[in-house]
Amino acid sequence: MASIDLAAKEITCKLVYYGCGMCGKTTNLQYVHGSIPAHAKGAMVSLATEQDRTLFFDFLPVQAAKVGEFVTKFQLYTVPGQPYYNATRKLVLQGLDGLVFVADSQWEKMKENVESFKNLQENLADYGLNLDTVPYVLQYNKRDLPNIAPVEFLEFLLNSRPVKVPAFEAIAITGVGVFPTLNVVSKLVLASLSRGDGR
Amino acid sequence: MLSRIIDPEELESLDQGLLAFLKDAHVRCALLVGRNGMLVTKQGFTEGLDTTAISALAASAYMSTQELARLVGENEFDVLYHQGKNEHLHVSAVDTNTLLVAAFDDRTSEGMVRLCAEQYAKKLAQVLTEAEARHKDVLRSLAGLKEAEKTELFEQPGSEGQA
Image (cartoon, rainbow over the protein chains, first blue to last red):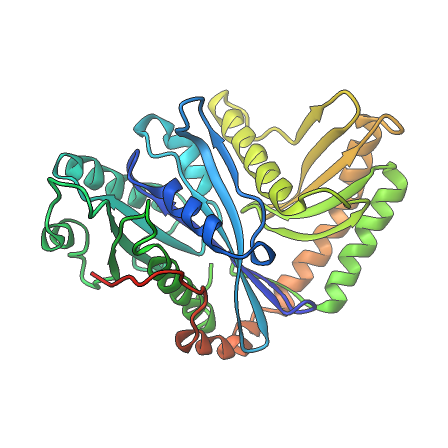
């Protein structure tokens, strides 16, 4: 549910990074946080365990370029990837405007990727949403590691729905693919708003 | 609910409502926050406070509390109250999409804040309901957002490619 302030001419949208544990969701946010100038970002909040695993969510508010007369702002959230945190994962989806599904490209993570993608659809359904109506993109992360599945295989696994969505190869730890992912999902969300089908 | 749209007049009404709540409840500041964590508006002494982060955290804590309520067989826990040594935080529902967050110290009490919050929630909810009804068609006026397709929303520091 985007927030549109006609007084301040500001639009604020909520983007959620979803995916299995350790796939690189927090790393995406950390790279964005480290790359955006101070005036265009707020503090990054991480609710993590002592082992730096996300317990509830990470949160990063950022300001994007002006579009028409509106200042556009995005609030980036991650979910905890570990399976047993589903209750909190579902809460983070509340009122979202767009999604990035981050997949870990390593062969041994394929089952977790698929389970997480299925879990995403189940949790969206609890809010009366589905992937046909929520703008989303895919990010195939960790492309620098050995033992990774080819992009075609990841596409077959995660992007074989009737409407294919944009997918990006990424090495989030060095920033490769992070901003293209963010830019495209942000554009999809604003396009969705301009069509009048915002949540 | 579709996107929340607030025009200058409605914002003024919401701010007036928050100001009246501030005065009656003697709280330090009051925030109107979407259940998705987005700050709608704020009033009071907020200098030095990261109200964006507070909004995200307060909404998440409140939503988490609602899930706890459901797990123990309650419909909802109406109010979330955090007691600190000097500063305290009150979070309660305004309507199904909006929360009232108030920070206060020992110059008032949780009871007083809760009482006033209940009273003003109805007034704030009224403004929000009217805004929702009034702006049902306003999304059409956001056609200018199509420009986003041609805009690089975030400047990228490196060169990367699409799969």
